[in-house]
Length: 364
Image (cartoon, rainbow, N blue to C red; front, side, top):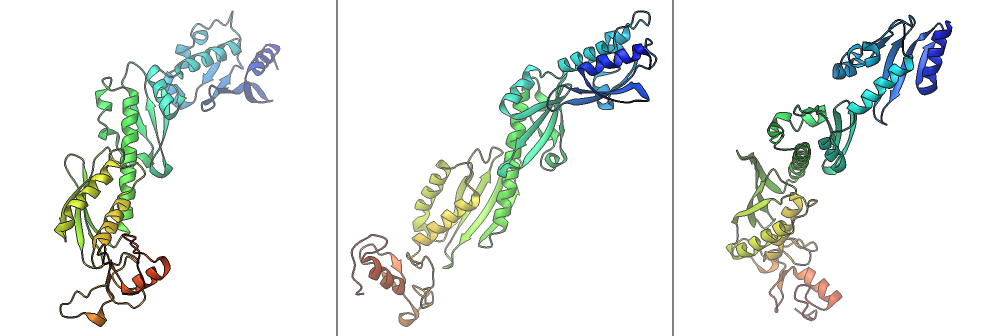
């Protein structure tokens, strides 16, 4: 091997990781590690040194930054009579790459708030966590002063399209952080709604129908009916801010108008106490429990229509049939309804009404 070529090779190996074959030591692959996430393999051929060496960049990198013979000063001004060391070319390339992968101020803001890192020149990779910690990824390419462009992963594209974003077309009125926040909210909204609908689909005891309005709200009409045929019908509206914003619930119909006011108070309470982790099914279960609690045909001990011991209802719903076909007891103080069998067992055990807690004897 020519001494000059050997010297150039050794200077490179002192600073950079590289591979080469013993038969062609002047043809090398240089490994540039710019960040923990960004690595490049640069092909280098300087077998004709001191003539200009050949540098081949990865195709994606070359597409981003162009021909190295144009942007690298050492190559552009190469003088074979007074050539620089090959390692100086690599240093210059590394310096340029370090500069162009440094995030701009808007990218810095995204990296401070979200899980994101630079993945290449002018390219920011963002990882967002949705409901139940499922991950969605996308890239932001932002070469100022040009507006940012977005590239969604296939998984993200299944639930959200770039052209659905409202903030992106209004850049720079909305900044990069506003765009990412909108994406995060939409992911949270759509994955959560999909999960809510799956939960409702599994509930045969809740009748439901779903429609989406022109303003983006999803409306779920539900009918909750207990075994006594008492029921209520609710209209639930989920805005684009759901689950950060609570669902709007309106009582449309109820089998007993006497409990309408209390039912509305329950819905207002659910709205005011809404938490991000609360589910629609949980709210509807609370409504169902309320119906059972207010029913005069549901036992306030076992919470069923028919007695678990004798199989008879508190009160038959067929006129003219009573007595031995019923299993009924009302507390004389609070008028709460019980199966007679449940009442006897409760008084034997606790000696008081389970609702009003008034002391009782086993006599009835």
